[in-house]
Length: 153
Image 1 (cartoon, rainbow, N blue to C red):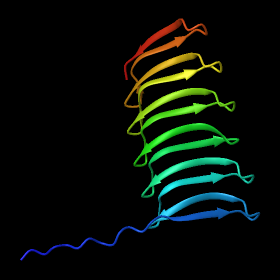
Image 2 (image 1 turned 45 degrees about the vertical axis):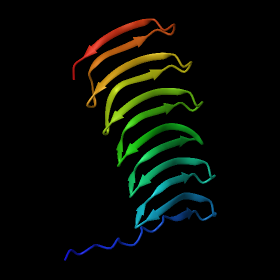
Image 3 (image 1 turned 120 degrees about the vertical axis):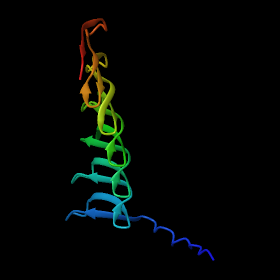
Image 4 (image 1 turned 180 degrees about the vertical axis):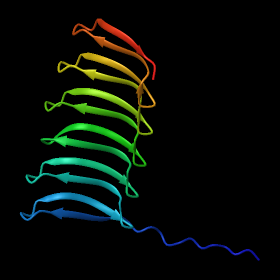
């Protein structure tokens, strides 16, 4: 006779938590499940201004995450099981996009762009396995090509 396994108890829902400083200001807000970070963790400075917003799944960075500077996004990124995967977008203090770098499995991969403060494209790089590989182009402020090089590993 075959023994049938009974399903185990359902996982416990994440428990919301907050850490506060001596003045009572929330410095960190997060949730724990089974002793591991689960869901969004937010950190704040002493004035309550956001410093980071990171997504976790079973204790590992997973999903959209943002680092703030003076309350404004400075870097936006995506993680998959603790590893950078997808676009990393960087911003200057005025909120202007300064760079877009693509990651695959924690390594730079594909096109990356660097922008001037006016938003025009300054440089485009091609990456493979975390090394520049392929065309690298620099542009004049009017958008015309200034220089083109080709890298191999």
